[in-house]
Amino acid sequence: MKVSIKYIQPFLVLLIFWVIIFDFQRILFLIIQVNKFSEASWFDIGGVFFQSLRLDLATASFLSAIPMLFLLFWSYVKTNTAKFIYIMSIILELIIVSLIHSGEINVYHEWNHKLTSRVFMHLSNPNEIFRTAELGSQLLFFVILIIEIVVGYFLLRKTLLKPLELEKKWILLPLGLIYISLFFVLARGGFQQIPINIDSAYFSKNSRINDLSVNSTYFFGNSFLLYQRNDLEQHLPEMNLNQVNTSVNALYSFDRNHSNFILNDTKPNVVFILLESWSASAVGCMSETKGLTPNFDRLSKEGYLFQNVYATNTTSEIGNTSIFSGYPALPEIAISLEPEKNRKLPSINQVLKKSGYSAHYLFSGDLKYGNIQGYLTEHQFDELADEKDFPTSLTKGKLNYYDEDLYSLFLQKINKTKQPFMHCAFTGSTHSPFDYPKRAGWEKWKGVEQDYLNSLFYADQALGQFIENCKKQPWYKNTIFVFVADHGHHTHSIQSPNQSAFFRIPLLIYGEPLKKEFRGSQNTIIGSQSDIAATLLHQLRHDAASFKFSKDLLSPTVKSFAFHATIRGYGFVSRTGSFVYNLDARKIIENTFSPADFKKEKLKSDALFNAYYSYFKSL
Image (tube, rainbow, N blue to C red):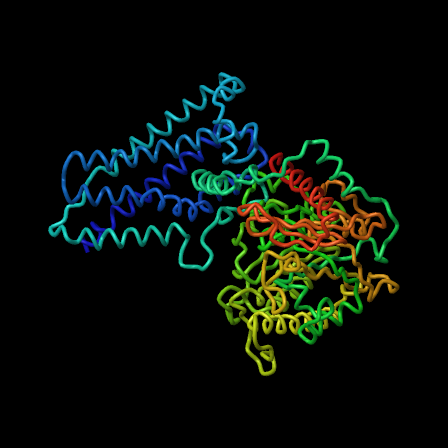
């Protein structure tokens, strides 16, 4: 037993060393920024030190891996040089960690968010930092830095200055492999399919408490990787500011006070169904593919269908921010991963909250994906639930619970909610690896994308049954349903994500509050997910002016266009055609415009790209 403890001790001590450092940093942060937490409860502040543990351990694992290798080397050769290398590896990491946190404490006063890669803009001109920062802030930075390094060094001397004493040196190799493997598991947060993310430390509706809980080093490292990936600025089309503003203002100029109302009720319940990967080219009422989605097709004959809506990008986290915040997408950027920016966006539920609505969100998978949970938490959803909240007796696929089980739990939650409410369900059976119960007659589609198509057929059956069950509930008559896909998917007819048609998705408004004269109608205006916010809020008699890049698809003077991001590129769709541009190749890879139309439409898309990027940078 003594031998086994001796082997595991350095592994545990390194982890504990870093966790203590991180918690000491939090205490310093609380002391110095005490005014920022005047409205926080002691319960939330105490919860930080528990909720932060998983992300702290993940960060500690990243920081411990290299020093552990140097410790094993020191244990093998037993020289002062090896000892010095080991100690210096930890001290260097300690200095980096302390620099990050000292900088964060200083900038939090002004930025109100954690230290991000934005700091590199200022470091490119260090003179600006010292000219704009007050002397007190400069002194505070160095005092905190010194305190954190001194405390860390004291702790280092007390705990980490002993090599392993081993009778047989050959055991160091397998021991090293075991240590590194354990660090890898902890660094990704466990054996689950989706690695740990910053939202694992989120637990409060107070964004400052969440900032305190999220590990500063991990957050900065994540932001740095995003910064390194983000080379959009060099790809921005050259346009002067007047050109950009004139073009964008014209595109977003429409009658915001129109009387084209399709709903009888101004305060209905709102139920969002986010349809994972539903592509328009596989939906019967929107394509040549007949028989795959009979239930959705039937609902479209009773609802109001938008035929030309496009996803803003190719991933779920981006789809969510576009739908709820009316936020347009940019290549290579997911704003859900940048809390300091996405928290400044408006959201549909926050507007409806002013009229007494509560907001709820249910996902059949893991909400950590793409920091969706963090984004929803920042935007004050009253209840978030995911796979953790499903009954353990249910069968679970690799990524999600089946859609039928999602809808069953969803209905239970709605039935327990006081009206008016906004409930959202995000499905999962149509996500690879396409988990659904295999039943006779449900796998009739063969050939290209057959797994996806068969999962879509199942998802449609589950959706149809859900609506039939909803019709039996007392709240049904006062409820509108908004069915929309989070993004598109490859189908038998559309294979390339470098085609604008790949991004076309279903959007359907359905329910008893829909006026009879609009049931079965189709809207052909070209728009995107980011236009849902302005469209819906105007129907509910709410001002949507804060949704800067969301247009009302029911306004009689709205412009018909959609901008979407692709993999390393972007596309634009209007009445006269579409094109897709690749940033790396620096060329158009799809174009259906005539030469004369292309020149005009390309100028519009260039203006939008510049405006969207400028807005992103300003957040």
